[in-house]
Image (cartoon, rainbow, N blue to C red; front, side, top):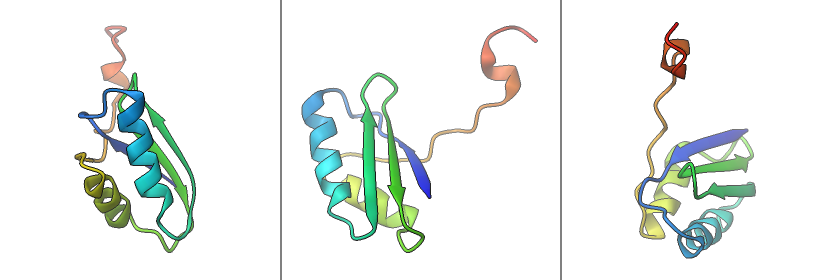
Length: 80
């Protein structure tokens, strides 16, 4: 299962490394991708890992995580 979080205070490679290290330490997490330009963290984990656990691990690294807002088709910027 892939969980995605917005981490708006992640701004550099050092931030991404701290978050990745903290989340990877959770049992059941198999992959973490921290995208600095989009400020999104994608976590691949087994079903036993909850979004709350991941959010708390990001918090333990010193950052604030939230579920990104769902985008609607009308938010694409094309005007339709």
